[in-house]
Length: 490
Image 1 (tube, one colour):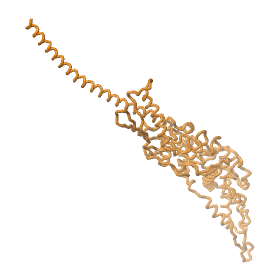
Image 2: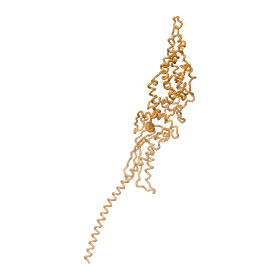
Image 3: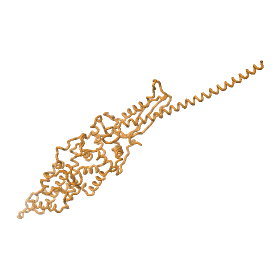
Image 4: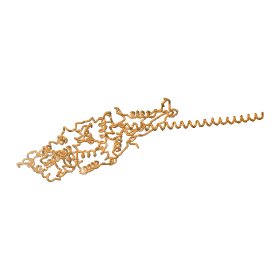
């Protein structure tokens, strides 16, 4: 019995020793396993928080871009973020505030669960900064032009622009744009205004005689101004005016950081840019009631502070073109030249001194050209058409009608180019930077005319921006996400 008891005791000791080994092994193993599990959980938590940060960053930046100026989009098809958000002063600080608001609303909701306890993925935003941005007006409006071309890229270069380009080429080839017949007229007027000495009665003594100009009644009206002479009704011309100092082309503009403000345009893109201007701007005879300036295309060309001055500048340019073209034609029309010479020979001075015939004839031709050019502009302002190059059939005023041309102006009719066609030629030929700045002026004045946008400025409008978000969570070092977002970003 004693032997059996000793054997059983030995076996129990052996089992107890084995159990002790297992306990130690399991304890050591569990420590390693638990450490691994906790490490994996911590890594998963860190990864989840960082992924969530990146997702919320995308949401916040897209949400801010979604606050684009609605009026600018509705009227001009442009997607731009007004960093004033309807306030008097614009600043990227306003953008940072909006970014922070959207970020926190989507990021920090998980900080407390339904029970009000801290969640495993609690985190918070510690800093949000806009580190780079481009404004619509940057680089002489390059950013704005990029937006415009994006809006227009679905359109082919239309017949309108190609037709205008051909008209401009024809104008330049003819030399009408570079001709100045007013200088010739002034020289001839000087010759006509002087005294001439001649021995008209043959007594050997010279007498002074005045040079008679049969077309003096026409020449005397030049001082009234082209628009005054050609307008169908001066009382119907818009009296709208602006304070230019309030708009982009006359004030110092805010500048972006150069994040994305490089842009160049080839010939086809320039054509689309001009087509955009033609499509969006009003003009004489095609006014928009809600526009501070009714003649917007005229402003794009002339840049004056009132509709009257802009229309006057356009008419003055039209007159130079028409005068050059009409003079070029009349000098090839032998019948009209013969009529002018016959009228010159009736002048008293020419009777006394036939050598003055050429001076008087030239004065008559220049007066005839002047009157015909005023007639052309009147036709255009009343919705008619005038060909760039005249023929005998398209010439309007007879010599007799020229002498009292103010009573012989006809409304509308004709063939050739309309007022709008000539105006578009002027705009197409205008300096690119000037056109862009004046386009921004028109956009500002129209958007400010809408509710909630009285302080709108084109140099507050952001196209693309870069933002840096810094966040932290318990048990983690601060981490950050940097993103560039914009309306034209792919």
